[in-house]
Image (cartoon, rainbow, N blue to C red; front, top):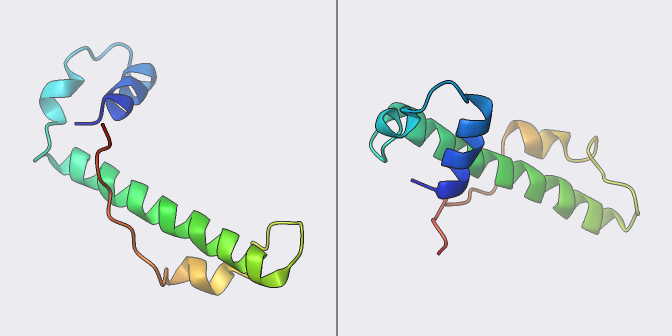
Length: 81
């Protein structure tokens, strides 16, 4: 499991010192976190791509709304050193 994810969860759940046991790589919570990270990356990419295409300096969130509803690009979540 990602140390960053564990540290984040420890900050949110400081009174739960045993969160590592419930969040091994096969757990539902761990898989849900990976899915959320992948969707977040795809959503950010959609907004940045729409902004780059527009040539505007402001983020084009409204222009990217269709892409945000049906994310055309998917990203795999991988652990980095």
